[in-house]
Length: 121
Image (cartoon, rainbow, N blue to C red):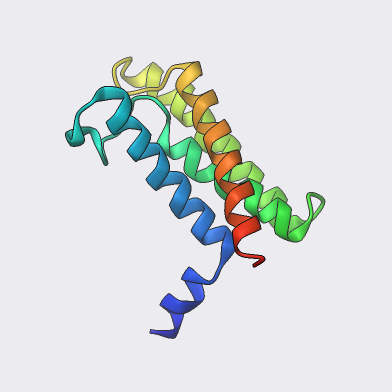
């Protein structure tokens, strides 16, 4: 059980978790339907919000020139490219629009700022 406590005390992990959770909550309000919670696609991109929150939180914690931040940023770039490019080419109904990805990125950034500030208390 110590692994679980370690995760919930980890600001980067919690930032990613809250990035995903907040994106799904925003979808419920935008679409006015609780059934969209947890579904793929839609505004904002939860995949991008999750990886954006992770990358920003790692950057704020370890510095933006650290190898860990580079890894998280590459993970964000791959996820974003997949969300807006690859999946749209495979099935136009499954990919995200550019705006859904941008809002996911911005949501993740805001979540990372809030999470890393709250975990410093």
